[in-house]
Every structure is written in structure tokens, then in C-alpha cells.
Length: 186
Image 1 (tube, helix red, strand yellow):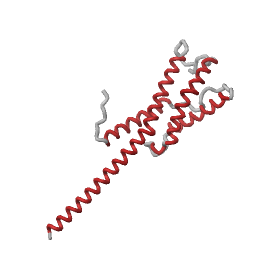
Image 2: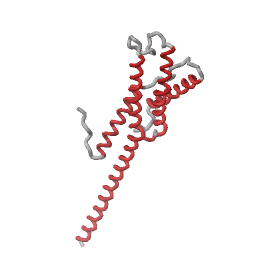
Image 3: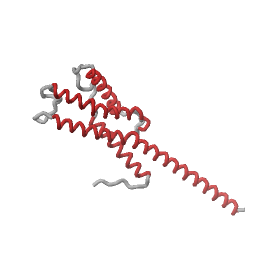
Image 4: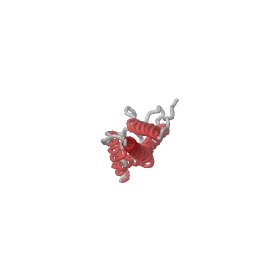
């Protein structure tokens, strides 16, 4: 009789252990699947777009700097010339606006993939900045060149840091869940 009770007890303990282990593995797989979506559908593209936009803007500044090295839009410099403004409009409409619209669209389409429980203010500022440039470029299309900047400043450095940190953190977590050590940077 004792042998039967021990056998049943061990079987029950084995069943519970197997069930709990399966549950833990399923939860880990669900976390990994969500993390992969966060990387592929939001943080990865956002990081790539912020880096591309930053590098494009740097190239614009280098190419269009005045002889003293300053931007035509820097405070304390003479106002931009008509040629400088025309070049700015070209870069905004063909490079910068499409990039920031893609960033805004990521935020809108994939807000469910955010790490935070609420929308970060930096992403709301990005969305407002894009809207500001959309109205500015609409005016340009009508021949009104009185405004050349968005009413809301672009959160360049803060957005780049947000995208970089989110991407890097998720990559570390992904490596951990996959049982790999994160590559060390030297």
C-alpha cells in the first residue's frame, strides 16, 4: 500500500513539475515572440530611421554650411538667402520629411509594442513635429515660403537616445532569452 501511495505521489509531483515547466517555457516563448516583434516592427526601424536622419542632416549641414562653418539657420547669423532656403526645402521634402513621417507612422501603427505603459512624451513631440512640417510643406506647395521650420522642434538627440537605448536593451534581453551572452564591446 505504501508503495502505491509513493508511486501516485511521485507521479503527481512529476505531473505538476512538468506542467509548471511547460508553463514557464510557454511564457518564455511568448516573451521572446513579443520581443522579436518589438525589435523588427518598432525599435529596430525607429533606430535605423533616427540614425539615417541624423546622418543625412549632418551631411546637409556640412554641405550647406556657410564659409564660417555655421548653419544658415543658426541664431546670430544673417538670415538664410533665397538659394539656401530653396536647398532647405528640397532636403526637407525629399529626405527629412519622409524619414520623420516614417518614424511617426511607426509610433502610430505599433504603439502596442512600446516598452512603457504610456506613450513617452518624446514620441508625442515627434508626432507634433511631423504635423508642423506637414503644414509648412503644404504652404510651400501653394507658393507660400514665409515659414521654413516646424512649429514644434525636432527632438533629435533625445529621440536618437530613446531609439538606441530601446533597441540595445531589447537585443540584450533577446540574447538572454536565447541563452546567449550579449556581445561585449571593447
